Amino acid sequence: MANGQDDDQKIKKRIPFSKNNAFCIAPWTHTYISPQSERRMCCASREQHSFMQQYIDQAGEGKTASYQPLTLEEHWNSDHMRSIRRKMLSGEAPAECMVCNEQVLNIYTYKSYFNKVLFPHHIQKAYDLTDDTGRTSMRPVSYDYRLANTCNFKCRMCGEPLSSSWEQEKRQYSEWDPNRDIWMQPHINAEIKKFQREVVEQEFARAITSGTMEEIYWVGGEPLMWEQHWRYMQDLVDLGFSKNVHVRYNTNLSKIVHKGVHLFDDILPHFKSYNVCASIDAAGKVGEFVRTGLNWEKWLENFKSGLPYMKKRGADSLIMDVTLTLPGLFGMKELHDLAIELDVKMYVKIVFAFDPSIVLSPFAAPKKVLHSILDDLLREIEPKANSKTMVLVETLKEMKNRPTFEEAYPDTYQEGFLRGRDQQRRLARYRKDGEESRLTIEQIYERNPALSQWWNS
Ligand code: SF4
Image 1 (tube, rainbow, N blue to C red):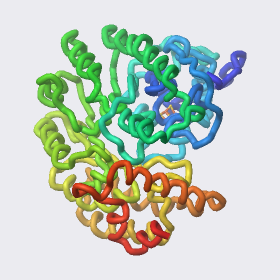
Image 2 (image 1 turned 90 degrees about the vertical axis):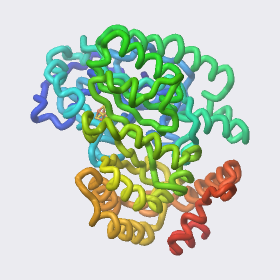
Image 3 (image 1 turned 90 degrees about the horizontal axis):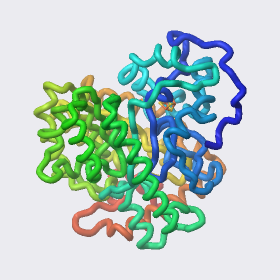
């Protein structure tokens, strides 16, 4: 890691957890690696990248370095990780954790999930088993290992690092730059695949067979498209460890049966608990626009097949996991109606955007237009919302307090908008929007004349 050259530094004073707002248990329990071998504390942390930027990084921040992946052993007590632990134990919030500490993505943060839900039982151990340099004898018990970017969808707010379908499209239309997208160069790409297969997957396999695994976060790419998902989950069942493991998914839920084995009927009943976050960003045809590859009817059928288990497994076992985008707002009322009808919980986040070219972000729209869309939605949704869906209401309200791109990026807003809109228009051509009952973004925005006028300006 490029971070931290402060080996000699020691913790001066440990702030007890009860008074320590900076502390997060993730750096003692959890480990993350991207499909391009970028290691981080978790998927929300914004470390300086060692090889390539992550979706969560500010565009253009830092340099692309050469591909020199670290093993888990090299990473776990590295200068960087020790420096983070020292800061957290001393009550100093690491800059890398701004997404949680400033609630950038959602109101309910990943940090609170780690501290309060997943690993409160490890917090005292973290204090006890970490020396003053930040070295810990604890080992990860929770893995977010993105073995590959294999995914059958091309959601418009995603991209090639996390979707092989995006990657294929970029290659097909020569939309990639070998100098910028170094990981896509064939020889580097082959090296990455080799490391992911021979090192990363083997680390994961060892954690599976060690019996120490407490939590797996399956996310990709699309984890249900990976043969490894089905194999390792079956291994946990066969080894008798599954009863100790909580599993978490972010999935597009397009495939829930593999070689006759059904996710909800045959695999998940063996696990201690589970939390299947089925990504869905709007109902019906608007949803299909936002998430290229989505078949709304099929998604609904697959989602319903998990419902019978909810009574026993709890309201968090099957979730409508919503990322709010600007076009998606036009299918949000129907999605909320469905959540009420099926009596399921929603998780809600806002599409990540550190750059004004992310024109699918709601904040790309002019403030007045956005607020009128949000007000219309709130008028429809709020009276029907219940405790399982109230987070949508809260998030829509909260969005009114956030700056739009025009306010946040006064100097680059216009250029960013034009760049982002050009990219969306190219995608529309590649994906043949408007054909075979597919919507175009223009058709979606026609529902609000002021928005349509802005988009076409
Ligand atoms: S505070 Fe947030 S970003 Fe930092 S390690 Fe914890 S979960 Fe990750």
